[in-house]
Length: 316
Image 1 (cartoon, rainbow, N blue to C red):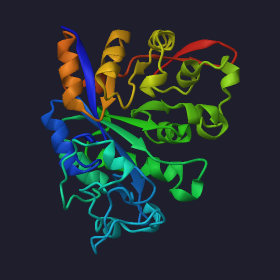
Image 2 (cartoon, rainbow, N blue to C red):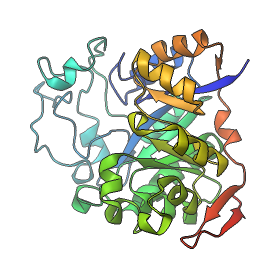
Image 3 (cartoon, one colour):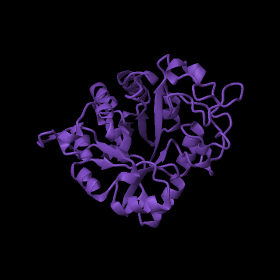
């Protein structure tokens, strides 16, 4: 029976508040391989688990119990203690965001966790850690180098480098991480908007030098895997990526139709807001969810391809 890797997106966003310890517990109960989550940096240099550059207006309430405005201070303008004061356990009723996750069960009192706390809560599971920087809005976060340093330091404190993969849409983060800790596996995230503005997001890489083929650009970074938006992935790209030694982990695979398509294509795993439904689909397809430890297999020789088309094997 084939193993198939399953990762809960932001914990299990479709079932529990995103990027919270409660959500991580729910993801674990679904029998996942591991969990994907996001990291920002506080003004005092603490890595915090949160997706947006600010506490999200769709679910963050201040100490007075009011949902925050869209211009709430940025994470990197607040201390870790400040950020721990937000309650992020309940979606804003009536918002479009809440409508997307009707099965999410509130957990009032859930807080923005530190990365250290998240790593402790996720002990034994594989980790997909997305570092949130925005090259089109550099003032919104700490620098890619500072972010990479903070995440890697936390991984070392938890002895978790070997079970983690660092994800980023901003490929500068991956370059910085490779320089700091070469043993940490890295994954290039892509979506249509970041590819369209490749000069910003792809660390200056010109897709034209690779005949527009993103999988060759990913391989040229020395990354170990590629995480495309599932709806844009086609079979030719998948086969090319896998032939280049890349693991392919599409993200936000949430519907029966999307599960079926990804499983039919033969991706290496998927990241889902509904790991409960994804697990059911995987098992119905005659496969089983890979046990934690899948990440340890993302360590093959990765072909590095230059713009001239030359190829050499590069140790990850």
